[in-house]
Length: 118
Image (cartoon, rainbow, N blue to C red):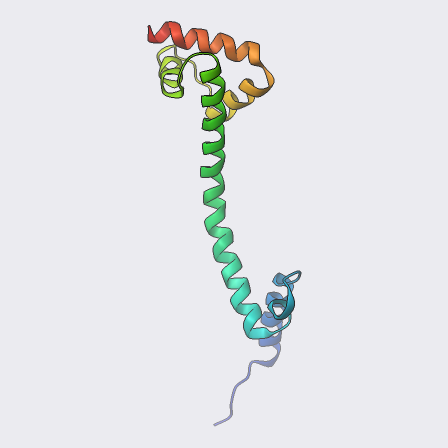
């Protein structure tokens, strides 16, 4: 039987992988087996980190809101509870931006939350 090598399709597949591996250092961009391993691992990390990025940003926003709220004499959990009871529907990203760029508006929200909790 003749050994089948899939000449052109196999070359095209390799070219696609080598394009993906451009910019990798050393053999990771030049040696076929290493390129394939590196690219597959890179895809796995990319898939995982697209999900982790969302978690990390949420953590950052919560941290900023907590710091800004504590500067105004209320904890994060009481602040969020107060906003929920006052029917203020702002997400954490928006609250974080307000805390940084619009302190006066954030002060008003803190007062609203405090009065709703009390």
